[in-house]
Amino acid sequence: MEMIIGFGFLLLTFIGVFLLVKANKKDRKTENKPQEVVAPPSDCCGAHEICEFDQMKMNESVIEYYDDDELDAYKNIDEDSYTNNQIEQFREVLYTLKTEEIKYWLLSIERRHIQLPTILKSEARMLMAEA
Image (cartoon, helix red, strand yellow):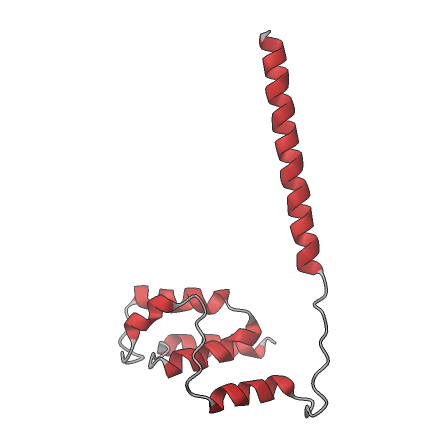
């Protein structure tokens, strides 16, 4: 009887591992899928990413959050006054962003009157240059 229970447990474990591996492969396939290409509007100048950014810059009421609500606590703090822990909070957000999101995030924190710590300015520029 114990042998049957042991075999059943082993079988269930094998099935669980198999399903996890299969789900992980499926996730990787969807990550590597090419993104759908959307044709720009006919009146586009060819630099639509720049145009979108310019439009966002013009509309100062647009503030987009990047899972960084906790940074609102640093409103009106000087860029050289942050503690190491506070700088790490900014760094954590910065390094979780996609390269193309960084300039929008910088605009977002600027509109929220949050200054990027001085030490992170060069890191942000470097990350944006990688694109």
